[in-house]
Length: 346
Image (cartoon, rainbow, N blue to C red; front, side):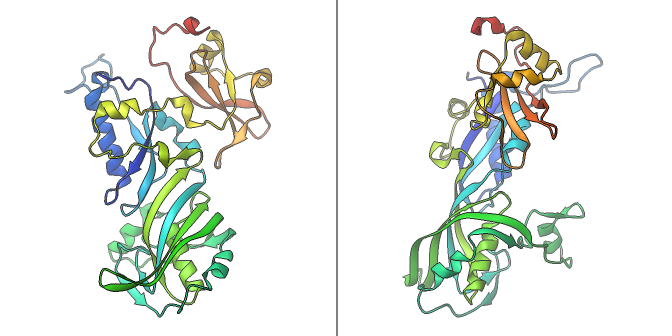
């Protein structure tokens, strides 16, 4: 049987109509069934007995059920790397439909208003120009954002009076018009929609962008399709398709090592004693930075980061520079094979 080992990253092409949580849970169940070493111990734990093994899976940025595309699933010890992956830029292929607004700002919602659309799409490019660069954006009311510890969408759907969220700064780095279907017949109706390529900072709601572009153009609109193409350095072209039909062995074969989580960060290679010291709670010395193959870099909203690797190429820890420029560990990956001899990689 295939072995998951310490875990890693899985790039998944999320299908439509399923939540990100259900995809992650499906992957976790498949991997548990594939690697017997990960199967949790059944039954109560007696006094003095070791705890049952815990095997986690998470994700680095959710997608709405309507959306498809790249979902990064963090497997096993990879869950510890989530903070460094969440703040990265993302690229989407989005379809915006004009003339109809919905409560969710996408096609899954209920129609809230209708408005005439411009007779031609000729003025859209000048409207898009106003959304490129840093902007202030009001998130959707029906979203996972929390107020007083409860998600906004739960408050709305329970009938509570919910104030519109405050606008927050986001950055639209690319906003390109890809295709236009204006007044075309589709499913016994006339459609007025456009395809956009959107590259944006973390925290941007493409649903809100669709609403705001329509309003700026003098009409209303909603997001009718969304596909995530990349997250930071990770591309959809490398993702596993058909995840709901895949076997656990197939998923293991696509598992990226933990070190692949931060490919854009510089590397510090440790000898056996240094690696063991870090795993035991030690901190990197300031003089170690001279051995980095490049300067530490900021990833998302993190401090400047670098990777600490052993001579086998395994990730030992993620290091960072604090506000004084002193190196320290941000997260440590414990040894999963206590009998492993690093000297074989020297």
